[in-house]
Image 1 (cartoon, rainbow, N blue to C red):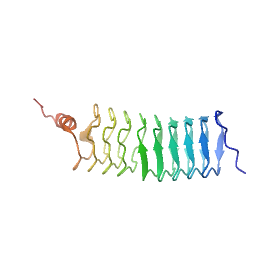
Image 2: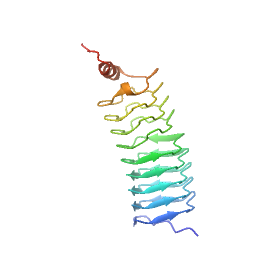
Image 3: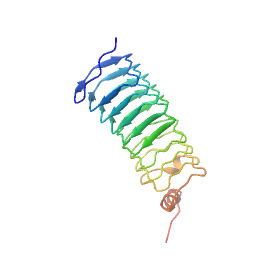
Image 4: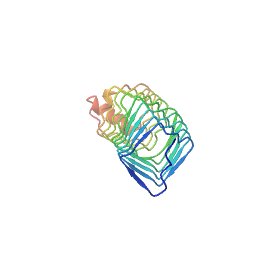
Length: 205
């Protein structure tokens, strides 16, 4: 029997949720701290102004769910399915995603600072204006991804595939772009200058 959903305005700490069926349910103005979610079905669910702080998600289904102004801070996502998820103005700071399905996905802005997406398949995603400062994108597949006006300062892109990705307008300070695969990658003038300087060129006006 499924546990009742937390009421708006409540905080739940240290609780373990296992095999819950929250298909199509709504979580609004709730806080979860250091909770564990295992095999929980959140398909077509909605969160709004919800906070998940230092929570663990293992084998959870987020398919076609919608999250508005919610925060998943320092979360641990393992083998989760985020197929067709909508993230609107969400905060994912410090969260780790491993062996997760993350495309297709609709993302509108948001703060993903320090997120770990090592080896993630993110091809074709539109991550325009997302704050990805200090994110670990090592070995990620970002082919044809749109990162226009994104904040990527200090992000790690070692062995990431940025083939045909759009980086125009993105803040790239502190990135080692030469560690990534760049082929037909779209850069604005500032990005092109940075790339040239990383390869030893001296750019003069």
